[in-house]
Length: 253
Image (cartoon, rainbow, N blue to C red):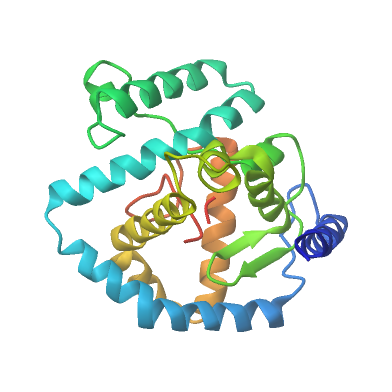
């Protein structure tokens, strides 16, 4: 059954690439009706579950929230580093590898950013397989809205599938391999915490966007697509969120 679902998704995605314009043209919203329905479903979940939890999370002491954010950011290096290498950014890969090593050990699994104090400056941007495909010249394909995960494109969905098919070391260690040290829940808790941390940092930004939008769906679509293009270009001209290093589709990635 799992193979059938993957084959179906790949056919859908490949079809999306065929439809997409690859150079300087607007990304097509090929499934807008379905996307809007999924967006409405996600909004209902967000208003009833995710946003209230995120507001509660924001009430935690700042050191706890900072440490939590540091841990999930540290874990994200496990995907960022291989994508740095695939994009030919070897110096950045070296810096991120040093940061991961130092913060995981001396920084106690990344709770403390010891690497920053040692001179390994945290000026990197998160990378993922969707961004790598973009740097290789692969077009976005159709715009998609995924249940729970949120905005994506055909290209970014392929990138996400790559993570689950062996491209994410953390997923491989926790879910794919049966070890005595890690459980499946470790992966899902870390991903959920990453999304929660992102949502909490951007409550005000998204509320303002919704209040000032004639069409909130279209605004989120534009925001997402602009952000992904800027990330692929490694540009600092980014959309207005409190944590503009991450548009994790509550994805990631």
